[in-house]
Image (cartoon, rainbow, N blue to C red; front, side):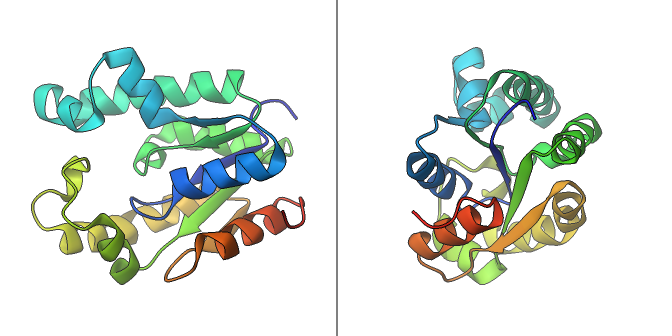
Length: 176
């Protein structure tokens, strides 16, 4: 297998960055987040990219960032919540899974996600009605996450340590 040891996918507020970083630390691997890659390349935040250049522009940058990270990174990789909306990204993730790579879907319910998001201005798609948007995202993207995932770990109302332990078990790394 080439590429990341683990790719973490899931909706906003599922814990991708928090859990991904903790899993990387437990495994002694580097952590990378494609949203951070996009921000570094664009020189602005994801939220500002949405406002200034629109979602299609952001998604194109995101697709490129995911392709680069899958090719270059060998640690733990967290993707933005909407990365799976790209057919090309899904194809790459499925191929990664078929060659022995782990793609873990961090699944979260609407109530838990809404509590975690609060009134965050850093999540442009959740700016107007966060609970309704989260519900819609969870429903429409669930089949996409399921398509690419080699394992699923529920994060709803659970301590980070428990989720990390489940992710490590799902990728065959035991407990930290």
